[in-house]
Image (cartoon, rainbow, N blue to C red; front, side, top):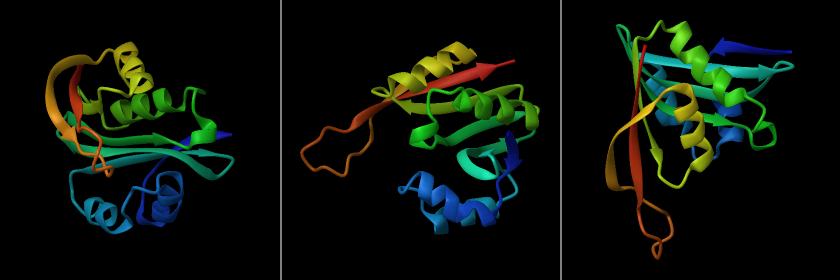
Length: 142
């Protein structure tokens, strides 16, 4: 059984196991802010994906959306994104995505997000020989 649940600090260890780049300390501090909005996707009571960002009034910004690697390509990303927009009753939503993240760009375009700009060199690599990647800014409106 799958279900969407509100993210709480109790989910921090599971979030870290899905995405090792997530800092529990940073995310815990974000969760304490009034504008924080986050949902988790559970499969048989195990967290398999999450989405979080900021919501003020009816405007949202997605900071991170991640699905466990072995649960991708099953519609969970779409379900998380739809849940975020519906649960927080958004009329508009923004996000940015690496220009090389083709599956995410495809999902966002299918969902109705449109490109709204770019930030060259926004995503820095941990590899000193790699070139920083462009962030594609995207916007959705009801």
